[in-house]
Length: 148
Image 1: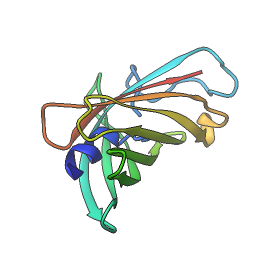
Image 2 (image 1 turned 180 degrees about the vertical axis):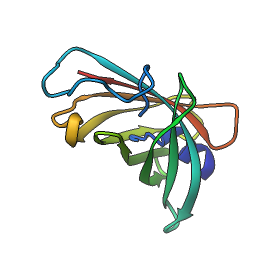
Image 3 (image 1 turned 90 degrees about the vertical axis):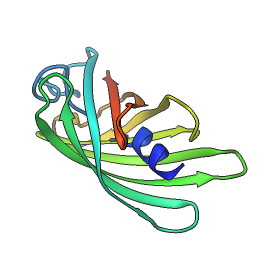
Image 4 (image 1 turned 60 degrees about the vertical axis):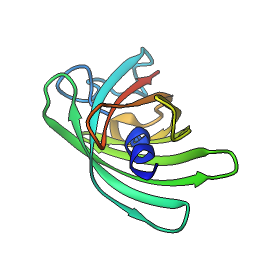
């Protein structure tokens, strides 16, 4: 359960985010309110159990389009056994700034969803949604972020 949930959520978010182009978002989000779509493949590098239902970890972020490494993320997560839900907070550091996202789902889901809750640098004022889908490979997740 832990590895599946970690992989699916690392977006986090949220974090947890590579662009459809080779570089993450080419224009500042705060100035350009047009939708920007970022597509990343997150590859888990390490994770640690922090308590019975809490864990954290780090991922390498690769561009889906180019396969190049474009950044790294860090996440913390909590599993709620009574509701069978996982909630994660992800901070993704890429060239030009950091995106922070909150993502949630269940360990048996194929899709985790969430929202971008803040950004720094060229992502200052960022708002948007996050969708994370575990890939067939162990500890790999495809993430799509839509910024407005």
